[in-house]
Length: 410
Ligand code: URA
Image (cartoon, rainbow, N blue to C red; front, side, top):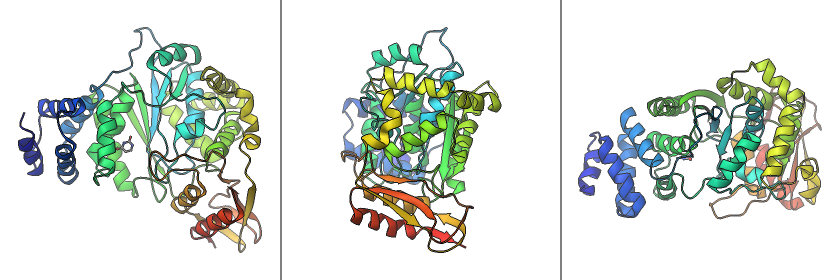
């Protein structure tokens, strides 16, 4: 294999074969292709794109750069969801236990927040004791007991993606549909799934800014899922407004506890039920029933306990992660809330300390916003639009100024 020729081939717009792609990824994972050649190839892919067949081959090569979770032939169907990320996007925490109540297994491997979008692992780690880093043997032991696990990527799963994602992050090659597709899909397919639902977000608070971009990514991921034998479906969701009523790690877990008890909020419950319906044999009404009758809540508490967390802390997170300042942001005038921009809100929440600017930064579990009004709601001057949980009055006021930029009342 002569790597410079393969880079030139892609640079000049020719297709790479499945064998060529597999050989490059195998060699890169072993350390035999240096980062400078891999970044040149990533940039060629960024500009030239990839065909559906090339993207499927890339995904397959990255998937087989490590192990794939293996399940017994008589194991229940494995299902999962992937969201491309948004502000206040906490659906995984409700969806995984809900689906497990429905008799399927959910071996959910999740990520951390980076940039303005939050991460499932960061949210879960606001639960005292909760372990997100289970070994593969612990995953194999836990899933038959609980029906769902929520964990981080293990060292053995998709090592090529770990290396390539870090490289893309510093070479301006993240925003490439084939590279995003392969990166997301290899990690999901490594779970040994039968079915996958993809929640592709678009708008100011999402990775994809337009419906067209989201549609293109969705098509690409579904095509790869089909090519590699996993039935995949898609929900395109607008992300111009945050999901639910809170954004911030512990605050979002508390909102999920309410949702798991069947107490909404409506937009969060609607997204969860839409996603669940796509991979479930139960009807929407039956799934909603599992939220109302306490089954999903009991399942979540069980999963938390089995993963080392203290389930009794779930209803006391506001005390465990208390902040010194809870600042009410008030409506400046009466009218209908026309805009509470997700991107602006996400940046303010990041500024409070809930997210990270680079992967090694710590996150503050306690800060964020809650009791958010929803777009379309009527407000009177002086009503609380949302509450800001901050470590200081100055931080709260700074966040308020930022959020105000994205608020429109007419
Ligand atoms: N998330 C991933 O896991 N990979 C990407 O390339 C983009 C988002």
